[in-house]
Image (cartoon, rainbow, N blue to C red; front, side, top):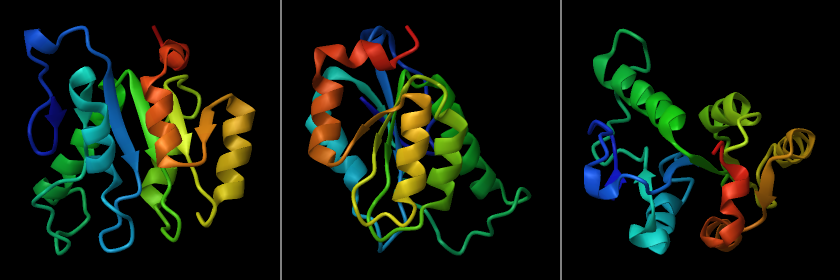
Amino acid sequence: MIFKPPYKIEIPAEHAGKKTIFLAGSIEMGVAEDWQTRVANELGESFVIFNPRRENWDSSWRQEFENPQFREQVEWELNGLEKADIVLMYFAPGSKSPISLLEFGLYARSKKMIVCCPQGFWRKGNVDVTCNYYGVTQVDTIEELIATIKSPQIAQVTTD
């Protein structure tokens, strides 16, 4: 099951008990690949996925608190991050991803984050040091990210 904004995150009974994953990270339209769809497809029905990549995003929306569409998007993401058992964070090479860096800072201590920061991300050194400092699981490729989620040791990175 996959949730995307603006739809409310309400997990039906038949999916209760499945781990929830928030797909945090680079979205920058035209810069970052749609890695969220790739990861969601690879993980199949084993998890409940919170994918913040909004299908009807309008880049002309004012990014201000007073703008209801913008505020709805940001609040959806904050809610999904809080509800998720696991936060996957991907920093796409060539992207800046300032909001992803903000979310990384918010959740680096959470013990529920797994980070993929390949060579080519402009602040890879900062991400590497922070992951090491807080003991965040870190991988180098999306393939490793997917394999880590599918591994039996995944319980170690959650707050259970």
